[in-house]
Image (cartoon, rainbow, N blue to C red; front, side):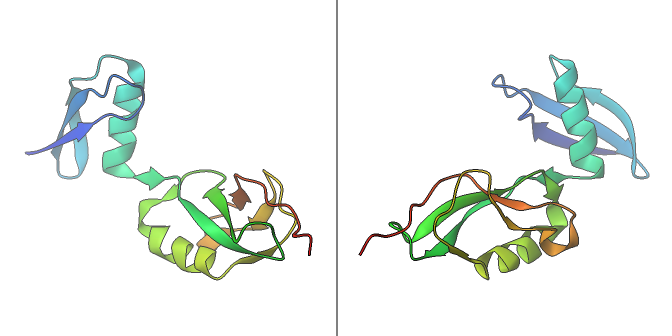
Length: 123
């Protein structure tokens, strides 16, 4: 029997959730104070995902970088491939919040979108 202890990120309480497993199957979940904690723990031990945030270079903008994120969470084991793809992006100003800067990052089916705005530089 294996036990995994997690800190839930489903809400601000941050419960310590213990997941008991046998042979790769969940046999029990304790410590959560709401249903979100149970869902988080189940997902975290079976198929962990993350939203990736970063920055992208902007050409011709009044700022050199724009903040970005994946539009949805992606499998945790694709984060490094996702970052390699993000590091290869150069956006052209202007950039608006919500602009898709890369479709299907690292084969995840998820887009990388701008979370900030950059205006065109006025020379």
